[in-house]
Amino acid sequence: MKRLLLFILPFIVLSACLKEKEEPIIIEPPVQLLLDSDTLVAGEKWGLTIGESTEALYPKIKELQFAKPITYLGIVGNVFTGIDGLESTIPLYQSVFLDETKGTSSGIQISFSDDKVNSIYTNEGKSLTKWPSNTNANATILKGDQIDKIYGKLANISKISSYAKKFERVSIFSKDVAKDYDPYMSLSSHWEFYASMDEKKHYEVSLDFKEGKLISIAYRLYQTM
Image 1 (cartoon, one colour):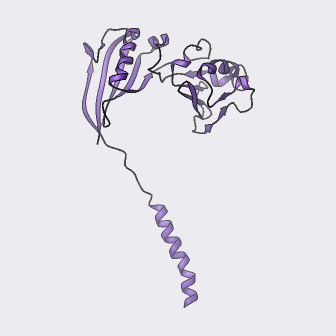
Image 2 (image 1 turned 120 degrees about the horizontal axis):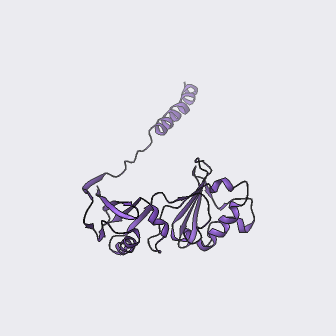
């Protein structure tokens, strides 16, 4: 009888472990309550006035940064078919994405913080310390590189045949609001930003443009429950 119990006991323990693995802890995402929303096609919101140019609006968004911290300013459609002409543009943004015309899992996402390369990821989520891994120093992006050195290195990488296709689509969406206006922003038909009111409330704002002029402001105010 003792032998039988010793034989059965490991299976009881294993069964209990399997049950625990089959029942993972589920953490529910916080509930977002919509408090207010509207779309304006005339007038203004926070000093952003319908009819203004992108160049006139941007300084006002920079000013909002102090009263309503802006965590993200996205410039939709800021996509280029090559690296040429972007030397003064890249340092004004928080990231640059490189890929082929048809998206690939090996596309490269380079993010900046404090004027340095903060992270390098592939589109499939693999973290890299450098890219590419088999090129000389002046054609390799490293974590910690100064942002003003990035354009020169990217230009060199783009001339290497095995990496040239990764420059068919250069996407620069996330604007660093602390930095100057980028003239390419006037070509975008849509900007969006998030503004925090306090720890629980935030705005999601969409700005639509036509021929470089603001034509509508859509906003939603959410509270985290």
